[in-house]
Amino acid sequence: MFRFLSKRIRYSLLVLWGVVTLVFFLFNVLPGDPARLVMGQRADKASIENARREMNLDKPLFTRYILYLNDISPIGYHRIDEQEKYSFIKLIPMGEKSLALKWPYLGRSYSSKKEVTATLADALPGTLILALSAMLIATIFGIALGIVAALKKDTWMDTASIAASVAGISMPSFFAGLIIAYVFGYLLHHITGLNMTGSLWEYDAFGGRRLAVQNLILPAIALGIRPLAIITQLTRSAMLDVLSQDYIRTAYAKGLSTAQVVWRHALPNALNPVVTAVTGWLAELLAGSFFIEYIFGWKGIGKITVDALDKFDFPLVMGSVLLTAFMFIIINLLTDLLYARIDPRVRLR
Image 1 (spheres, one colour):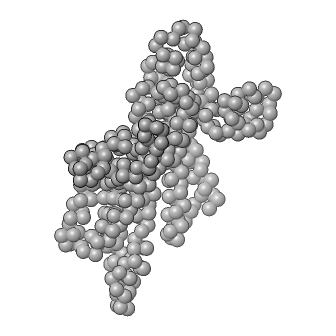
Image 2 (tube, one colour):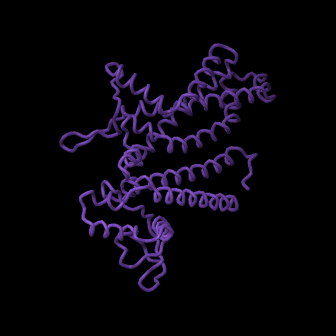
Image 3 (spheres, one colour):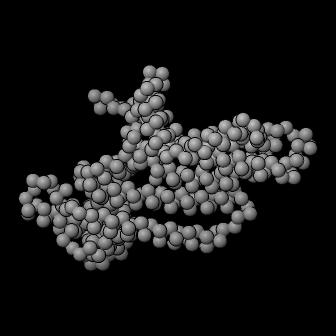
């Protein structure tokens, strides 16, 4: 177990470093002056130069890269007078500087002037709730449809589920989101009572807020269509394979009902590929909710990232990309551990 974890953690850190490097150089070779974006078009030359020095734009590109790694690393090398900025805990004092333990510092947003970490922390719950809701819908209905299709093999129910799953896999999430928002949030709004756009919390003119769970329904369905279709096909295939095994025929011969055979014997042994798909798709949904959030006006990482791209707010975009990559890596690591836990035949190496 320890050997497996250490190997996966080293691999994950290498992938994260590659993402950090790619993101940094990508956004630092784009045209435009970040200092001008921060200070505004009417700022004088002296203010622009001060902003450039504060943002390390007056230094060579490779030096800025090293400073950026130092900022986002949980263990950094900082001056004592920077403690208020980075909120670090001194580990090893080294004169005017110290090796310190801290939260990764992702800079400040160009548009809002708020720390990127605070902005992402405010938006992250919305993305997590949306992704988990979509995955819950996809898992429940996908497994149910897959079981029905396997038990009713070669009937109209099997054919219909296969056709629906193929259509769901072929349909991009953003296209499904547009159709669902227009039909159920606009054309049929008087029937469904659902809105085209909206977030989990709604605010009134006096600053109060109320929970608006109904705004979650349409984006969760739109985001969950593709994983639902894949889980349906995986469950059907796995169930058909398990139902053909000798021990299933033995269970029927002992007089067990179809429900007992399915729930006690067939389904537990058919869940391995489904579990892998569910955990893998959860990571995909966290990264793939960008356009769904933007279409439905759902406040989350995706929406603020698209808005930041529109405003050339590079620190916020870079921070959201790094956060998404980090979550993707963590979920994949947990997937490997969970898969080995469920299937004793899998060995951690």
